[in-house]
Image 1 (cartoon, one colour):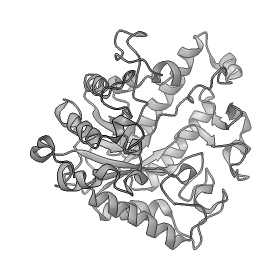
Image 2 (cartoon, helix red, strand yellow; image 1 turned 180 degrees about the vertical axis):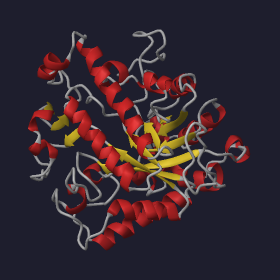
Image 3 (spheres, one colour; image 1 turned 90 degrees about the horizontal axis):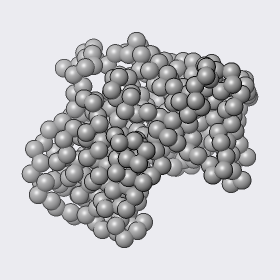
Image 4 (cartoon, helix red, strand yellow; image 1 turned 45 degrees about the vertical axis):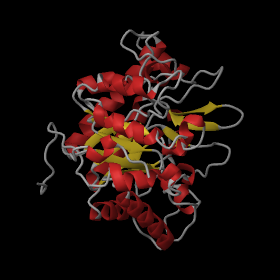
Amino acid sequence: MIISSVGATYAQKAEFRAAWIATVENIDWPSKRGLSTEEQKREFIALLDMHRKNGMNAVVMQIRPAADAFYPSELEPWSEYLTGKQGQAPSPYYDPLQFMIEETHKRGMEFHAWLNPYRAVFNTARSSVAPNHPSRLYPEWFVDYGDASKTTRYFNPGVPEAQDFVTRVIRDIVKRYDVDGIHFDDYFYPYPVAGKDFPDAKAYQRYGNGMAKDQWRRSNVDSIIAKLGRTIKQEKPWVKFGISPFGVWRNKTEDPEGSDTKALTNYDHLYADILLWLRKGWIDYVVPQLYWEIGHERADYLTLINWWSEHSYGRHCYIGLAPYRANSNAAWKDKTQLPRQIQLTRTTPNIQGQVYFSSKSFLNNPNGWNDSLQNNYYRQQVPTPAMPWLAKKPGSQ
């Protein structure tokens, strides 16, 4: 067990404490495809109970990993990660999303529905694709991008109809389910594949309006984020909208406002201008994925947490932490690495919590970190921090 004075004496106040539960490729849940309904439920309850015991007050649950659904949808087919075959409903039938929300709320935790906006087919060589999958119904909205090892099919963010479709998917979820938040991860335009440009030349020719291509790509992502922010609040003005970007916005060498890092960036490589979204108030919270150790040569955790602290523009900033990296190198063999990172979230201004990737990292109590959370950092349960700019949920205190 790691004890620290900051953890032990930290004034207990509202703090966002969550874990990501990934469904793509069955990373966290269900543990494999084709489990019975009862086995799926049992596994999810065990995960929730573990997180609650560790002191979490929220889960960030992936419910649409590849234009598929962990809930009955008229827009997209059932996920293959549930049953093994895309389009096949669970048997005996149940609504996994409804079940997960109810179980999460029963434990006093928030449920943030995590979606991947643009990934449509995870691996074109082997993914199951149902006849009613949007990529079959509207092939003109999609492009393939990858290399010899894996090609993925994506909605083309430059096609307005694709943006409208994704917006309809989000509206449907917010309207029908009692989610506390909608959450996107770091995949907007995909991470670059060496020597290959994203194949959107036709869309650029048609919709580029004289903009430089990188500027046009960023404007495509900006427009869907603005649209989604509005859509969510139209349906339920109390539902939070959060983004979990890659940990570096821009490097200082590219922009004086950037961080003192030497890394791939959201702005230049994924075409995601997170700072604009925060400044405009289009999103309610940001969870930069700071998966590097303290003192990392190219992307130091301390440098980055301070940078995000100074660039949250009054919105909430929770830090994405990486228990999955336990024992992956000398720095992560140090049992104090994660506890020190938690301490820094508490001593740095404008940081209101932590989110951990991923659920399965906690199954074996890596480096005793579950003990650290239970006996020290999260010993006392606390509520999630209030967002004063949001409407109150009807019936809430």
